Image 1 (cartoon, rainbow, N blue to C red):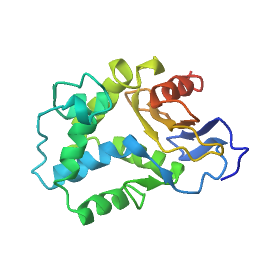
Image 2 (tube, helix red, strand yellow; image 1 turned 135 degrees about the horizontal axis):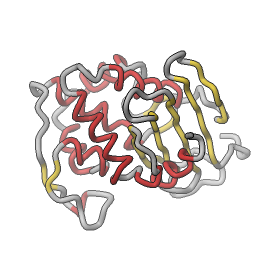
Image 3 (spheres, rainbow, N blue to C red; image 1 turned 90 degrees about the vertical axis):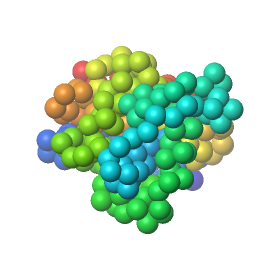
Image 4 (cartoon, rainbow, N blue to C red; image 1 turned 30 degrees about the horizontal axis):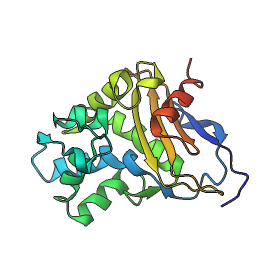
Length: 213
């Protein structure tokens, strides 16, 4: 990987036209690990195999990123707080072929890795399918992520998801933070994906706010 990669990488999309209006992302066509940005699509795959019903599960603090845990959560708060325990439990119940076919239906090939632009467009497609079974609770969770969840540093009413993934830079850091934002929350016009070198996803959300009106 190019050692001169920018500390902040950004793609900005006009949703109505489908045009990328800002492309500040070297090697944007290469697949990268997407970490927790996969969670909405894991949820959709689970729903398809379980009559579009999401469980309520108790977070085990020892197996989650938050030391105190998230308590008992349903899908909306699990998305908002990016609960690892919840989505690991869902993923264990999804056949691999269903997981990958769900990713392909939304325009990317692998639920763990994706080119950034393809993943951004997948979130736009998710929002467009708001009326389909199982999608509305996920969108509610994305809105809650921006209001009081992992993307709250965005400080905008939006649909948002954060994540942290292995660093793809040289030199390496413990991880890179990601944020995807669709703004505004109702009838979004702009979609962003931001990668922030060496900082968590919550900080990537704050960085994304700089590109919103």
